[in-house]
Length: 92
Image 1: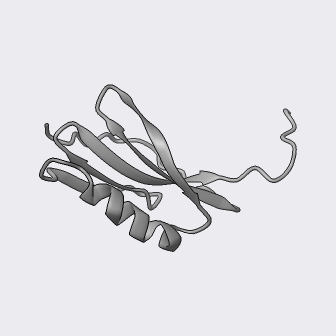
Image 2: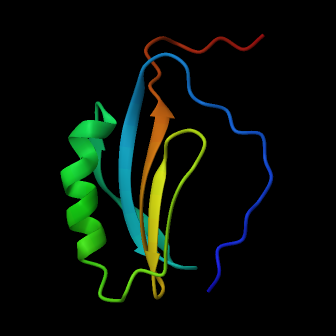
C-alpha cells in the first residue's frame, strides 16, 4: 500500500499540547496507547509500539505539525500533537 501525499493546510497547535500515541489497523480504527506532555517523553514508547508491528515496516513519515507515523502491513502507529484545552471555550 503506497502512501498518498495529500495537499492540505497544516496548522501547528499553539499553546499547550499533549502528544497522543495511538496504534491500530487500517479500516479498523485504533486505540490510545498513551498521552504524553512532550514528544521526547513518547519516543521510547513510540519505538516500542512500532517494534510490535508484526510486519516489515513499509512506510514512515513525519507531518508538518511534528506528528510521526509508521505503517507495516495493515498496522500503524502514530504520535500526534493535540491542543490542550485549559479554559472553557466560548463560541463567538
